[in-house]
Amino acid sequence: MPTPALAAALADIETVFNGFASPHETGCGRCHLPEETAYLRTPYVRVPLGVVDMHGRWPTAPWRASAGGGTA
Image (cartoon, rainbow, N blue to C red; front, side, top):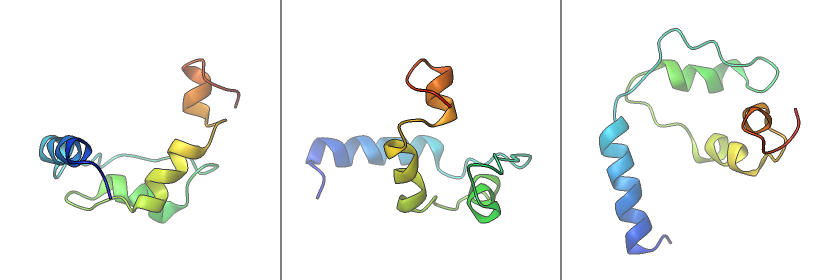
């Protein structure tokens, strides 16, 4: 269970990005299944926690490499 501060921060993030979508998102076919990329193209759809969690735990993610945090 998140702390009250974390719960409040997550609620703020949801308020700001609620409904946001990128209709032309193509995703990375190497990194994502088509149904995972579809979450980003569809407004008012939550990305499942398992998909979000994958990005937080993958130490060699290409986006981390471009930010200096690992290798692709």
